[in-house]
Structure formats: C-alpha cells, structure tokens
Length: 184
Image 1 (cartoon, rainbow, N blue to C red):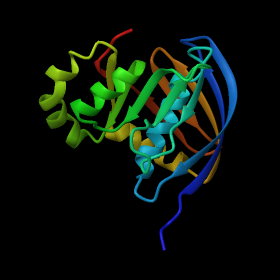
Image 2: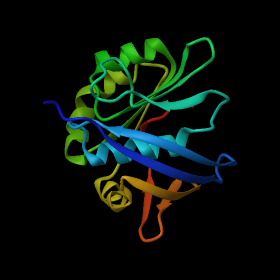
Image 3: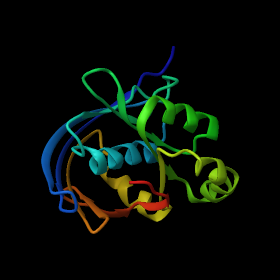
C-alpha cells in the first residue's frame, strides 16, 4: 500500500515592506512521502517571497510525484506560465526546459554541502539561460524554520531589506536569499 501525502494547512500573514505587499493567505500544502520537511519549508518560504508580485495567481505544484511541474508557478488566464519556481538542484537540461515553458524561472537551492559542487558544474550553462535567477538558503536558516513546520500553522511573515522573518506564537526564523545569479 502506497503512503499518501501529508497535508499541511497554513494561515500566513505577510507584510512585505520591500514590495509594499500586505495580505493574508490560506494555504494547503501536500508533502509527498519522499519530500523532506526542509524542502516543504523552502516551498512555503518561496510562496511568501513571490506571492503578489503580479496579478497572476501563484500556486503550489502537485509535488515531487508529478514530473514536469515546479514547486510553485504563476499561470495567467490564458494558461501561459509567467513564473516557474523550482526548489532544489535541478540539472541544466531541466532548467532550460522550464525556462522555455515560462517567462521567468527562479531556482531556490538548499543543502549547502551539495550547492557548491552543483553550482561549479552548472553555473556556466545556467548563466546562458536569460530568464533564470538562482538563489540559495543557508542550512542554519533552514534549520531555524523547522520548528515552524507544523501540520496546522499560523505564521507572521515580515520582509524588509531582503531579510525575511517568519514566526508563530513560539518560534522565530530569520532567512535571506543569497543570490548566485540574479536577473530582474
């Protein structure tokens, strides 16, 4: 018998001072049995950082079990993909394909011990993908987010000067994207 996804429900109050974006979002995240809680946390962080950037709706992809879908994406009314957000360390072929299907692609890498060798291997080819930006989150910052990852959570998220603070009634995490390749 196959294991099912674990469902997480989040109420997120976002105050993004950098973008002038203030909203509350109710999110349901499905964590595939093979997905780590760290990856779930990065997906949630990515949602907080990029929701509301445009008039398009940012949605979570169907997860690791669905090939050819990102962690998050913005799809417009015509079905075109405005933004493709991937979490992890995709290969160049996958990044090219994703960029070809979208107007903008963002990769959020995590796992510092794997990022440096991955980036050394792919940075020249990734740099040729005009629509691509790549950021990383440091392990210590990911670890700060782990106590916040509960099956039911109410988070307050504040973004100012590129720094994100996430908190619930007990825990607080401070996280920053460290850009390896940035295109605006």
